[in-house]
Length: 100
Image 1 (cartoon, helix red, strand yellow):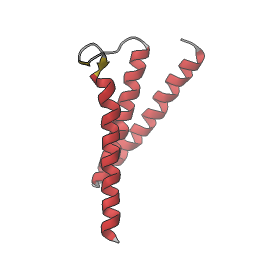
Image 2 (cartoon, helix red, strand yellow; image 1 turned 90 degrees about the horizontal axis):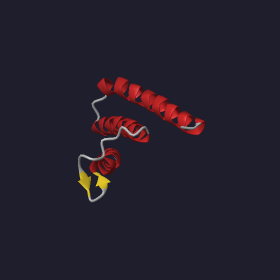
Image 3 (cartoon, one colour; image 1 turned 60 degrees about the vertical axis):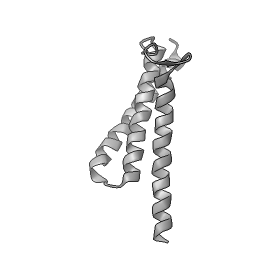
Image 4 (cartoon, one colour; image 1 turned 45 degrees about the horizontal axis):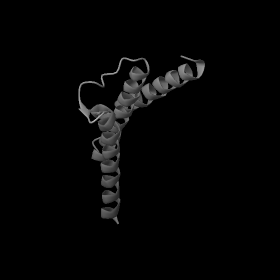
């Protein structure tokens, strides 16, 4: 592993950990469904980051469930977080349009 890859891994883990830390701190202070979905999406981003780093080190769990040749988790994590963000933004748009 070269220096660039090491810096990438450390920065992704550190920044992701900070984002998840503050998201978890914010979680009990909000009852808004949109914010809850954003928080869960943020946690999923960190899970995806850790999963990708484990794959870089060769510790991935790709072989369990496959769709063709693509591991299911590789497809599900990014799709699920995007769906959560879409749902959160839709809730925010509906709330804004209802108040006008």
